[in-house]
Image 1 (cartoon, rainbow, N blue to C red):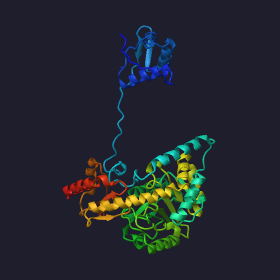
Image 2 (tube, rainbow, N blue to C red):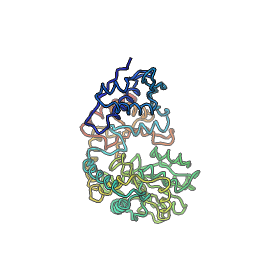
Image 3 (cartoon, rainbow, N blue to C red):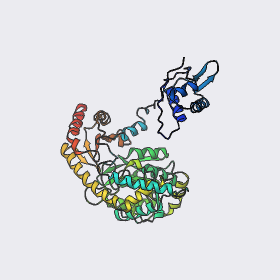
Image 4 (cartoon, helix red, strand yellow):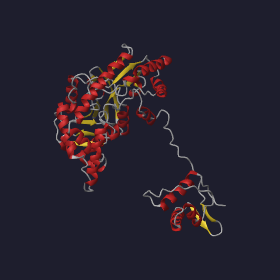
Length: 466
């Protein structure tokens, strides 16, 4: 007996009727509505049922037969072919305690207090969408050739001009490499430098993703403590004078927010020049300094060509763009270009062209000014909602100190059920023995309309674990 078969055809659609029939039957087979061995109507009967030409159904059946979804026999008719039992593909969770588990926890969202992402409310999304749509049209109408592996020249010019004004870095477009964000820039720099097996200073506490990247590059990490003046350069020199690399966040230390003092900047550059060591400057927040003007970039003081400056649009526009840049020391510019061409090409031209237009027309700087005003207001509101003796500003976050030994990882996981995602401070330390307990509350994702209730809930969870 023929298997009942419901097919709805849209005669006004551009998709041919034969293809609609094929897709409908294929979907019924894949979903299990038509089981293996089920008999289908003959193509003559189905044509009559659907009110289409017999050749239309025959074409659909021929394609299904070619795909080995059905088999036709004069004795048994047309039936669904035998197939292996479908197994649902379930993505396995990351191993407990693994880096990828921590990565997913830190990047999941959107959530209140989540760090590392900008506020959606401040971004001119409609304007940028229009600019990007135009950029896509420009890209698709251009000749189909391989683009410059260093990135679009116009974007590199805009970035060079921006860095001169905002970060006091004097550089030419030829020294700028467009990257797929900070991680891409870090990977490219490590590939260019080729320092496998050598020592690297890493801020303690410091960005967990950077630490893991250095481990994957097979570098020997030397944790260097951070205080109110930034990374302790003298400690690093005493502990590892033979280090070949230093990775720092001098503008606003991640995660504590301190700015590397001028004295330590000069000492670091002097030591790096003498030791022939390299310095990677992670300028992850660019000029998003909420009080006063941001300190000039470390690279602006570099006279020995030892600093590789890495910037990103993830915190200022969106991490979804996967767009960043680095400024290569002149002596390494050609090497960076080679690595970009062979191993790390930049994002597609349309994303770069959209960013170019956004910067050239002044929208980027206006967006930054507006964003700083909003973040400042959200910082003040957040501080008022917390106990003053326990909360301090840490860059674009507020650090809620917890008693020593408090399980900040468990507290952070508990808050997920309530739409919150503060970052546990202890995860930023290389050694569990020296780790301090706390919660980093992102300012960009702390909207005032939900702030009071969220803070009350957060403090209630903290008290439960105290």
